[in-house]
Structures are given as structure tokens and as C-alpha cells.
Image (tube, rainbow, N blue to C red; front, side):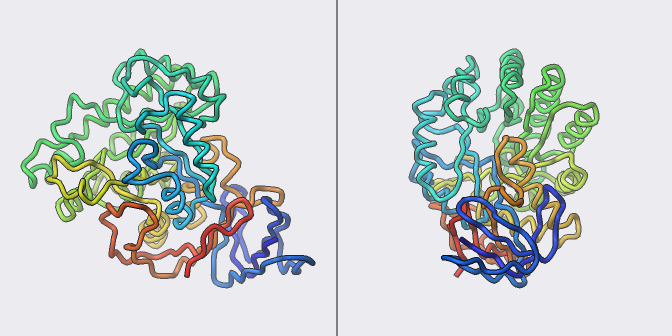
Length: 423
């Protein structure tokens, strides 16, 4: 048993918060209440005075690079980075090598995930080989354990195929996620077409590449009533399109990354390839629109798009280096620093975006604190200084190293076991 005493508990699902103790027995929460007595038997007492007690975070967009690219990350190191960042559950993307378009590869990643101390789930691909030409056996993959579908990393360009995929996912009541960038409009991806592309002397990626596919997929979602997730939204026009679709009652969701609500294309100029990602960092008006979307519920999920790459790869010139940054170990601190301390939202709201909402979208038993509920609990020191730089991830490709942030994960308890504790 574990008894957490004297903490300030926040449950974003019920709205409950206050000075409350929490008792864990096995992999479930046994009791929540004020001034709980230490039970008889073997029980560890954790003093959470001055700390926030919150549900474990859930990230529904991570790349653990396994199989195929284990030199960047593997499922074990990715899970370790997640645990350190306060995540008790993650959903892996399917753009591995081979891709997760078949039951054997799906079982491989899920089996490895079960050997980690956190809950590791996985999406399966929408199309075979991520070629955008033929659907995978989506029903079979769902039965084998996939929690959603995506070809993230590669946009789906065949509208008829997208419609068919949405209809299939809707019939199974499963989410389908979309990477919205039309390559026909992009000269050099990862850098915004504007001030940043002019700085590097390249064509860059225009905002229209994202907007056009978002508008297409929102329309198809309205026709099919599919539960779709617009991944890593980056443009103010895209945010507004999602807002209007939600107002019409469409079953649509959107995610924002910490780098898109914290940085602009100025960071690409300053940090070079360490701030190169797809879709790219855009303008301050876009960043502010993303924050406004998070505040009013248009964007209902924060996800990291944790994308490890080797130092050698990121050392290449701007057009040759791969896109993406790691994010699991900086995500919560960026949310607290940028959004909560920035005055945009409460900590309870931030936690809903990082735990309750993503868990609900993927039908996961997570993201809440309740007697009888899962013992996935984190302790947060919201006032503690955080200076990223020493990572559990295999990779360190991020512009946030050396930043001064607020919000330290002091302990992470997953399924009733202490899986991480800050030194």
C-alpha cells in the first residue's frame, strides 16, 4: 500500500480539488479523504506537503522508433522518458519499420510495452505500408489491441480512401488521427514559409498545406460522424475551422504540442534544426490562436509528438535534417510555465488537457482520481525550477535544453507502483 498525505489533490474529471489524502492498495485507489489514518500492514507513507496530487498524464502521440530505428529511441527508453515526465500512459504512432499495419508488428510493440513500468498502447496504420492506397484490416487490428488508427508522418491524400477509413473507424467507435500537410504545396518541410524560410533561403511550408487538408477532413468527419483527431495543429485558420466544426456538432478533436503553444518561427531561426518540425512553428498570431483554442475547448488535447532523432541527423543542414523534437520530459513544465503561470488557464484545466481528455478520446481507463479507479498518480511541485538537459530519452533533440521552467514531477505511481521519483 501507498498512502499519500498532505497533498493538494486535483481531479480534472470530477472537478474535485482540495487538501486530501489518497490511499493506494494494489493497482487501485482504495480511499480519498482528509486526514486518512495509516492502515495496518506494509504501507509506504509519502508526504506530499506543498505538492499537487494529480492523475497520471496520458500522451496520445509519441514515436518510440521501435521497431526499425532503435538508435533514436526504443520502447524501454521511451517509457522511461515518459515516466520521468509524469506520464503513466502513452499511445505510440505506427510509422515504424516495418510499420504497424499487421498483427505481428502490433503484437511485437504491445508485448514490449507490457515489459515497461507504464501503460504503453499503440495505434495501427490506416493504410498498408503507409502508402495511402489500401486500407489495413482495421477491425482485425482493433481486435488485436490497437487503440486507434493513424498514418502520422504521412498525410492521407486520397479523399475517397479517407472517407472509407472514417466510416470503418466510426463503425468501431475508434478514433482516427490525421497528419494534415499537403506535400504538393510544400517546397521544404519543417520550416514555415515566411520569415524563417527567407532566413534560410528555402521555400518552406506554407500554412495552406495544413489548412486545406484540415478543411477536407472536417467535412468528411461531418458526413461520417467519425471521431477524428487533427494532430499537432499549427495555424490560426486550422483552429478556427475546428471551432466551427465543433459548433456544428461534428465529432472532431484537435491536439496542440507544447512547442506550438510556446514557440514561433523565430525559434527556428535561433535554434536551427533543433526547432525544425512538421508542421513547422509559425507566427505569433498562430501561437496565440492555439492558446485561445486550448482555453475555449476547441483544442481539447495536449500531446508531445515526442520525435527522437540522433545528434548526427540533427547536425545536417536545414533541408537535410529530419523534423521533430523530443517532448515527454519537458511537456508538463512547458504547460505550467506557458499556460498556467502565463495566466491563460488553471492547473486543473491543463491537467484535463494532458490526462482526462486524451484518455477519454482513446477510451482508456485513465485520467482521473476516484476510489476504485486506477492507481495512476503523480506528485507535482509546481513552484520548483526545472532546467532540461539530462534526459532519460536516448535522444536530446530539443530547443528547450537550458531553459528555466517551472513544474517538477516529484513522483510517478503507475498501477500502484512507484515508477519514478525525483532525486
